[in-house]
Every structure is written in structure tokens, then in C-alpha cells.
Image (cartoon, rainbow, N blue to C red; front, side):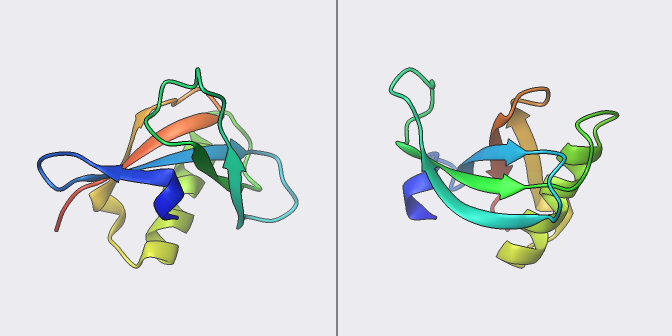
Length: 96
């Protein structure tokens, strides 16, 4: 996941995530390359399939849930900083 993440000066970690809503199963699929004009300082994003619908914030909530379990951190330490209505999202992991 190091190719998909970076840290700011305060020690917060940011993760580029490419979400695939309406999948059959929620799971982390691996990494996918990002285009040079994606606007993020990394070359890859974490590809996450979500069985939730992309409506009423359901897929975003499920994304936070799977990242929380995978990274073994509290959901309150994760937030979507950009891409709430996009498939490319920037998730912030607040230092604990």
C-alpha cells in the first residue's frame, strides 16, 4: 500500500483509493495505476470493490468500514477528504 499513500507534515497518512461500487463482494483487490493528471502525489491507488450502492453515502461508509478492519484502526480515525461522489477518493488516516 506504500505506493498508494503519503504523509503530511503532521504525520497524517493519506491513501488514494479507487472505489468499485455495486460489486458482488466487498474486498481489497490490489493496486491500480493512476494517470499523471489525477491530482494526487502518488502513481497508484488502492482498488476496493464495494457491494454497497453509490447512493446515500452507502459505498463511502462501507469503504471506511473495510479500511478500518484492514488497517486495524478505529473508523473515527478515517475520513474521506476528497472524492465523496467520485470513484477516486483520498482517505485520511489521522495519527493516533
